[in-house]
Image (cartoon, rainbow, N blue to C red; front, side, top):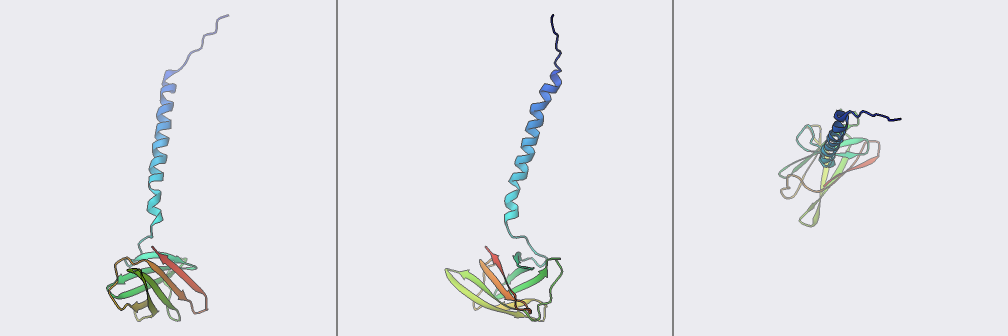
Length: 138
């Protein structure tokens, strides 16, 4: 008894192409992951860091440091009653800048010298309820 099997060659040729497509798609998705490792930009042009129940947007202009606070719902938080300090590593030395609420509805402070556009360091602040939070900026 002779068994005759018919093979559809079009299906065999399609499988390697499909695997290649999935492999290409996976590589493209993985290539985009390092972009998420960086701090996102905020609505005021600064860098955003997580600080407990808040998001802190760091905006630096010359000697001025401004921190825009938003809640987890991305709505602005009134900084009245908050106090904080920005600690930046400048030339191997730590510079501490006291932060207080300003009339612009932000936490702000002034450094002794001009700051780089993207200083490395941390912002630590205390909420009116006494809870502290820290946002790091690398």
